[in-house]
Picture (tube, rainbow, N blue to C red):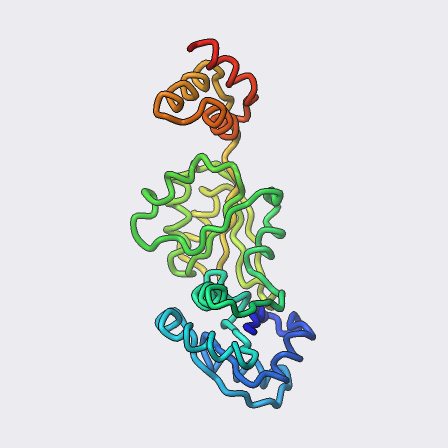
Length: 269
């Protein structure tokens, strides 16, 4: 069995009892950085000395098959440096390989920078999307397709690129879009800075220190034009999509009634 184990994102007090027990009993640990894994065990008072295997972004595809076969016979504990494996960290490749090989995968849930930042941001939490690290280059072009996204968006960013990235977010999404910069979560100098993208871009123009999560409010809903929506349904149907499916697709995108769109498009035929 493969066990994905969430580790503290800053405060060691967030280590769960299940994590400590797993570390104490593990025979083999696949770690993003084996040195960090050893430091974690030492800090938590774990005296176990398991076999350690490196599993990081540069080798996880190649090593996953071997480690999955090992997990078929003996439990394999998977750790990243902080947070849950496979969430913007190594882990996804070994999970997919295990599923394909019919090897059981389970998780020891725990700290998450994504969810912690989202909860502290003061922005809507009912619907959100995690976009991972902001691109290093071509940010405005990459972000522009997300400008109309109505869900709250969560990004990771490096501290020295923070100011430039916030400025690019303001360009792509609009200067007045609400956002929050969450820095050093769960640590002594934790900081949650809230404001518009323009305000935050100015505040962090020189960058910042520590681990950074940026949370951005979603776009305001745009009132849909019923006539244009019906036009779109008819156009989709002309392309070969069933009329009912076309109406459902446009209804999902606009918030208009699927039945009304279907009946209006039907009358045009």
